[in-house]
Structure formats: C-alpha cells, structure tokens
Amino acid sequence: MYETLTWDVDADGVATLTLSRPDALNAFDLTMARELEQVFLTDARDDAVRAVVVTGSGRAFCAGMDLSAEGNVFGLDETVRPTPQEFRASYDEEPYASGVRDTGGKVTLAIHALPKPVIAAINGPAVGIGATMTLAMDIRMASEKARIGFVFGRLGIVPEACSSWFLPRIVGIQQALEWVYSAEILTAEQALAGRLLRSVHAPDDLLPAAQELARSFVKDRSPVALGLAKQMLYRNGAAEHPLEAHLTDSLAMYWTSIGDGKEGVAAFLEKRAPQFSGKASELPPIV
Image 1 (cartoon, rainbow, N blue to C red):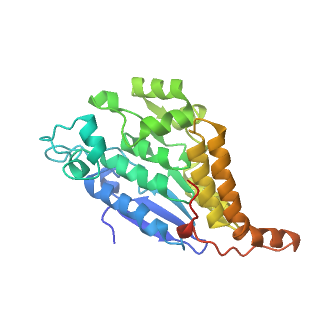
Image 2: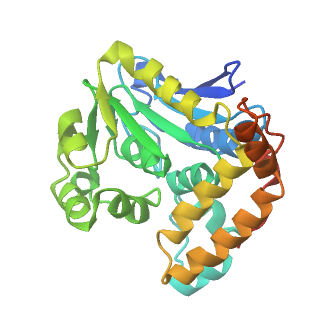
C-alpha cells in the first residue's frame, strides 16, 4: 500500500505505523513525506483506529532528510521569491503549496490535527526531521539506543516541521535554544533529563510498552472526550487568557454531557464498563 511505511491496526484499535526504509536508516524523502501526511489525514482518521504508535524499522527511527536527492533536496522551487505577505495570503496555493511550504511541517500539522493519542516509540537514531516529527506527537518514549539531534545548524538551515512552536512548549525556551544552538546528538538519558522524553526502555521493551500505554489511553474511553481534550489542552495552553479555556471547556462539557457523558455516568453508577458510541470523526465544534 505504501512504499516507505507499514501500517497495522490491532483488535483494540491501536495502530502501529512503522517508517520502513531500513537500508537508508529510514531517511525522510519526499515520498515518505507524502505518505505520512496521507496516513494521518486518512487511515488514522478511521474510527476503527483509536490511537497511533510510530516507530522505525531496523536500527534507526529516522536518520533525517535524505540528502542524496538531486536538485533541491527539500523539494522546494528555487525560482520562487516569496515575501511574507504573499506567502501568508496564498500559502496553500501554487507555487507556494509545493514550492515553498516545508514538507515536514505538512506532516506535523497532520499529526497535530489528529484527534487521537499519538505516541512516538523512538527505537534508534532520530535526527533532523526524524526528531522534529516526533514533537507533534503527544508522547515520546525511547530505546536506550536512541540518539536524538536537532542538527540544523550543522547544515546551515533552521528548525522546521513547526518545531519552533512545539519544542519550546515541551522542554522550555532555554533548553530548546541550547539544543538548537549546539546541534549536538543527545543520548536517550540526556533527552529524558531535558524533558523531551516520557521514558527510556530496553530496546526489546520499547514498542510493547508504547503499545500498552496507547491501549491504556483508549480502553473504556470515549473517543469524543479524548479528541476534545487533546484540542483543548493544545489550544488553551497557548491562549492569552483563561477565559478562552473557560469558553471551550464549557462547550466541550455541554456536548459531552449530553453525549457519551450520559453513558459514562450510567456505567459508573451501575459499576460496569462503559459502552461509548461517540466517534472521533464527529467531534462537536468548540471553537
């Protein structure tokens, strides 16, 4: 189905997405970019999928952008000279959509928009886009063999894939700047100490641990409540005033209280497992 990825969904609705270019250390190319965006905009939005775990095939997670491509290795049109005003006004139209927009950013925006838990199981080296793509995922777990680097400074380029938004929110501005300035390769323990990672695992334990964590998030949980909670936390964590949180919280509480919330309360009172019927594909509007 895909050239650079494999996709598997278990009986609990936990999907495992594997970057699969092992001979190239799962280096990110334009085909992988298109396929990752497609997965998160289509396959992962199927209501049978409750959560997604992302990992790499072989000994690497993703060794960064494949720099062996001819021409502009990032797939950009070198003849376009966009001004900020022109780009903002027409970023989703040609020539900007394919000639200027960062391919990694398209992927991370698709990941971020998915109203379901996404967990990175970083099994080995993850540098450049291999590191920044994980920032749009909700939780990052890593193998003891993982090595993570925001190495853009070594190539004379800048952090991409919306990482200038995600990274400071995850680790703080001081840590983010240090890692970007230094362009050093971090061990799993250094990344854990810097709050980039949730946990570090023995290599053979990583993927099962990530899948089990994903399963614990979705078993006996409302897909609607989970999807709204994800939207609320990301949006309101960057809001200017708590009133913004109050307004979205109020709408989300209203819609869940007359939806899956009724079943949740009934199941609690009757001391049984809930049977939620809401779908992540049918979230009520809260903004």
